[in-house]
Image (cartoon, rainbow, N blue to C red; front, side, top):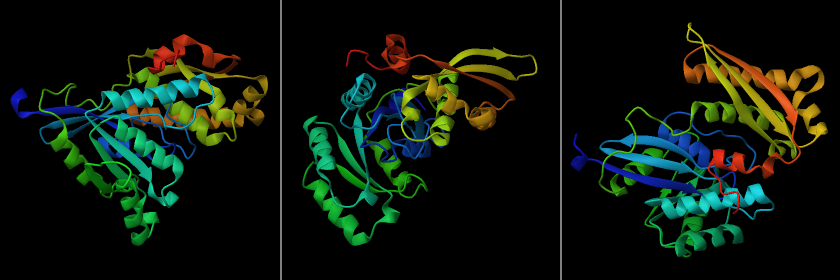
Length: 301
């Protein structure tokens, strides 16, 4: 297969928080490249997942949810989502159909996406949780707001309808050479991927506001002759009280997080992993420009 036969393009997946964007990305790629939790605003940066469909390479970009930001980090996250829209060849507007009728927020997002002049596709997610009549009415409502080139009914979790969406995108991305090797699934570095896995486990274990007041950094990565790796990570929290919550009574929480993250990393990396976690207080970690650079976010947004 020559470059003259291939297609390659960037597809941005955008939508409200918790619409299922990371789940769709993982389903499309066929592997877990973006963390998924039931909490909103889990994704902080633009994560690229790479799928092959015939002669087409589709570079999916999982974006942070678009919402009304309240602080610097949230502004940078929303800015990253809109920049992804501007850079994409095709934009998939993913909407959680189970939320019911078209809300004012969803309508405003559709209008703003339409104003960008992008090749816009609507994907209604979780269609198994809504009656057919309500689904058709929701589709008509969206089509009355924006000029969608195509509409797909999917379940990102089960994969229903996702193959049809991928087939459409494979035909719509522009002709050109592939940007990544055929066996590469993501552009995330192993160190960042490892940090994201641990952050996911923390999100799932902790409650209320704490998950949004912490971050995880992979401080060191050491390989051994037997193929195993030692990974040391620091969990930064904003307050001493948050540190106690992250550790848990008798260290129960941090131990459970370590065990679950270590098991997933071992499966992902295909080797034995020795994971070490440390919790430190850094009051304004979210005001550190270096962290924003690591995440691909604009500190000045």
